[in-house]
Image 1 (cartoon, rainbow, N blue to C red):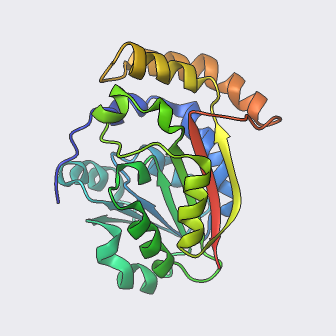
Image 2 (tube, helix red, strand yellow; image 1 turned 30 degrees about the vertical axis):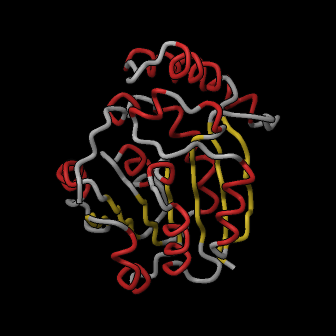
Length: 234
């Protein structure tokens, strides 16, 4: 295990509307036993606690984030915090009857994302759901991606190919957050920023995300800062 050294988790924890938008997309596909990969400091995990699920397993490989997760969640008897990579817990997760695996801004950190997707296919039963949210558009890759430890940003076709090769059927795959392209390009490619301001996160989340969410709920954008994928194991 190694420590997670990037500093974006705390500012992004302020993006309440942003994460609730993702949850709205995931909600119809949540099963009874949910596993979140790369739970971080538990920002998205806290939203999962509000959902109608029976058990939540949080997998986190970064040693320095585990204390936060355990402090926040292990008092709840139906939440389990697991330290390490998902590859180390295939049998354990399968025996636990995990039927939904979630990764929010996680897959892009993995050097061998294909191996992890294949492992997820071994954990889930037929019909089990994989719900992913990842950064999109390789040409957007800049200083922020480097600072946050991203190995890549995804092309839509690339993500589709990797997930189907791991044995999944795509239920939905679409871009999200069209205006975020501009803000990310300016910050990461022009200004060469290596961190994000809590104030900017709060402002964007409060004033921009509700408008974008309303528009993109009606019209799917041709491009977006991120991709959301909903898939089912065949």
